[in-house]
Length: 118
Length: 112
Image 1: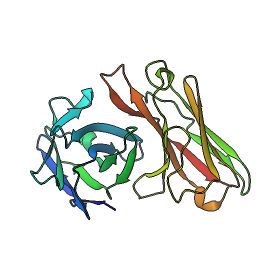
Image 2: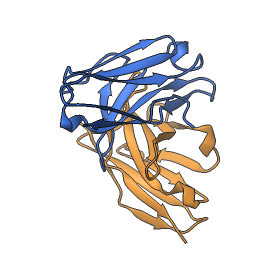
Image 3: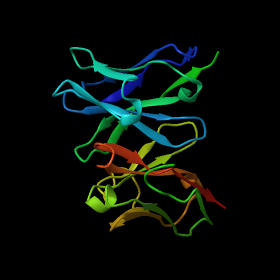
Image 4: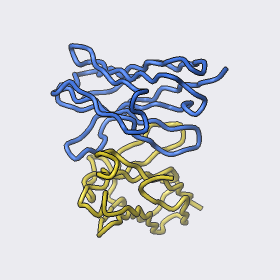
């Protein structure tokens, strides 16, 4: 079964960008959509957007339009989430997750902590 | 605040039954979209608990069950165990935000 392995923790300055990767171990994303979900400290889950490997297109939550880009490499073994113009409120754990056919999230990555601090 | 409303906390003694509600609206649960539930233990990624309103993934004990009616859904846990102490989230799809995934705010379950 596919496992999702994410890149390591990041510390960024306000106004900068971060790019987090999510790699499929034991398979590819060829038949799965991949979503990104974040969780601020002590807060709930927030969906950011998704990558559709069949269409090779992304769809972002309105809140993040213009600030987030979700892409994948040609082999569709790694999906990337780039968040720009970082602010302190973007400090969170960022998760990638595979999408089931009911738009449920089946397999989750281990999470990547992004800390935005001056 | 979250599009789906959950109680911030619930509690129960070992062996008891608890329920967690998830209230939405006509643009998400009420529109017929499926509800899914996740369990999150401290410091770990969410774990799928229920998908498609009532279905348990392989390996999830049958102590966990869920239902959906109208604009709401509910997760029930019977035979409460200490290991069930966690945060629980509901999730659905919402058309009012141009077709987005939405989560409840989460419910912290305390096993007394």
